[in-house]
Length: 186
Image (cartoon, rainbow, N blue to C red; front, side, top):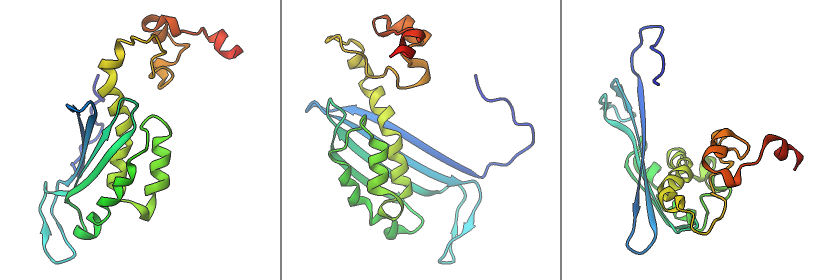
């Protein structure tokens, strides 16, 4: 169901698009490629006296991480197509190689904040890292859905719909369902 119609006439100002595509690699690893694009619906003056045209990207950044079956990053690369301060912005790109070794499912966002917070990183590339854990879970969902080893599915207790004492788990993951009374006892 979409949002309700706006209650007042309005004009568009800013559009941020974030897109993630994932790929299975022939070497048994997976690539997640994230892209952020910011545009304005109006033109505006730049620092050098030029005019930035409406609809042209202000920010256009890319982040690729390669992960293994345990969701650990084995390679990472950042790149810039557009940034408001050009080479001053893009100079940080090589630092995102420091994502290697982090695990997307184990305190990933906290670790990213510790490594790339404030002046240690780029606000926009770091923002792209925030979508990686859930994109990785979706990437691996088909493989993990079969659950051949009988282990508890990793997504349980990951959101309100998949809480182990909720109706969705009771219906779709019955072996791991815990009644609300049982959950509060433990």
